[in-house]
Image (cartoon, rainbow, N blue to C red):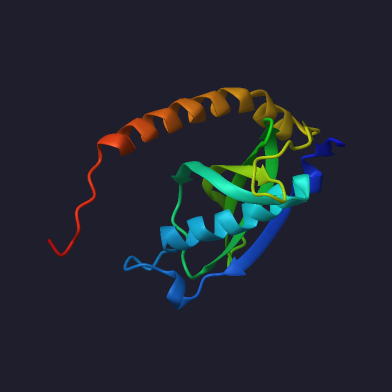
Length: 170
């Protein structure tokens, strides 16, 4: 299984914001952005391991600046860190005012995917090779994020055990 560079997993998609994409504040609806981030990141995951992948977590979604219909939105994703069967991906969301050309990082997110074999079981993934300073820094801090995710997942499972499910008709 041959290691891959971060750049080999990079996906970039730029699109416009239309009226059906905005919320009541006339800014890009957060749920739409999260859905788009997940879709683009899933391509990075599959490019990395050339296997089916499922989203295991989306964390650290930070909305830093509103995105308006006057902007284009560019989502860039690439693999930053890998475990045995897990693949961490960063998503950078760049808003560009189409009239002025001003660009800003409008949101960031980390996503984790798990690669699956033909039986739907987790499978080993290739290592990732960071090359740029940005990629190296993200790689160096990846293990710490993975450990925090494991602790958070454990807490979430404990919380799920005590949560009740009410039927809305009762």
